[in-house]
Image 1: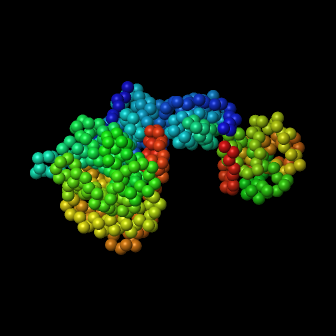
Image 2: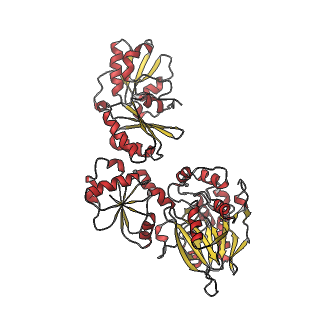
Length: 188
Length: 378
């Protein structure tokens, strides 16, 4: 069983409705915007309810893994900075990324959380969450053009600024995964 | 603390056409898919997770001049919301057992005595599975009982038979069901009754059964309460009807009150449409028009009679049921093979369970049967 790294794990196993959502809601309040919770539940109805609850509250339901009797739900707390205008000037759209995806000098860097990446990402994209980028930068091949993608273009904007400052050749992908219409892979 | 309302009490409100305001706190998708239907019922759907911080926002949408029932999937969330409403000064109930219990409720309704002149008052009892629209039957005479299309809630039939000191002798399934899990085999095992299944539907079953074929017949009690099989394929290739005491026609999933069976649940719509037409337009038309049709499903709550039963004379259906009045064969073929409603939840798994190939636990059986019945085309 593969484990997906999250900021917190909530054990709601054995609890009946409405408790899994009551607990999730409470836990979300302790999280920073953009952080991810894994909710472990055994109530079969929790999948549909958690998805509906996340949608109605602006949080991001990432997906559910069935692990025997346990349902592992992944939810990302809505991030406040998604609305800010991107500052980094070198911007490409999704179509461009799809067109250059197979090129030898292309590197697609997905800076979303591990759980977001796990449920759906561009084939060949590598994942380094924005929060880990500073310390893991040396993993990236500086000879390539790096297309940085996230959900809407905000986190990738910050990542581009960090990478640009270190001399990497980067492009920010806008809008990113929220509107990605081409092939995706899943690693769950 | 909010009071519980039982599924039986809700059923009585449906039958008596009483008013009830239902606050359904399941998620929107679940509510849209399937809810408690009543002619005089009105609804508000607000998911419980939108009410965790309080119910103030919906108070003015809840009436005070009729009962309010809070409904959820399994009861827990409805109690939570009902208690919040009580704290806010409202008197409300919650549905005991939630939609899970609603799906399983069976209401026995006697259709009256069979043999009005004889010494024995033979009787047909219709078990109305009100939440899913499934109908099963107990034919009773002189301390003996025969069951047709029993659901997996076997205790209901066994308790009913015990209370009336009835010995269950034969258990029939009109066909291999795809929409619900049959309780027929289990009841037969527990009572020593004979379990009958049409062989053409039973090619893949893993257990022994008696072959239900055209003309098969059993007698209930010592008098002339005769239950006779009539081969009527179309919904499945084995689908079989019953004529009971020349009074009732049990049609299984071939003919309903306001609709007809669909031939596609085993993936063979094109093959079986001819059989379906033949059963509806030839076999049934040769029967006495005075027979009262007892189907295995109802689709709309409007189909319930005054006493809650689902039954109508064959000649009325021959005149009024749209599916029995399509002269052109090609039009008929199109109607039953195109634009079909969605297939029932988990229908393949249900078929395999009824074949004995799968033995899911109770919780899994409930999950498989979730949602409305979808066995008909109109």
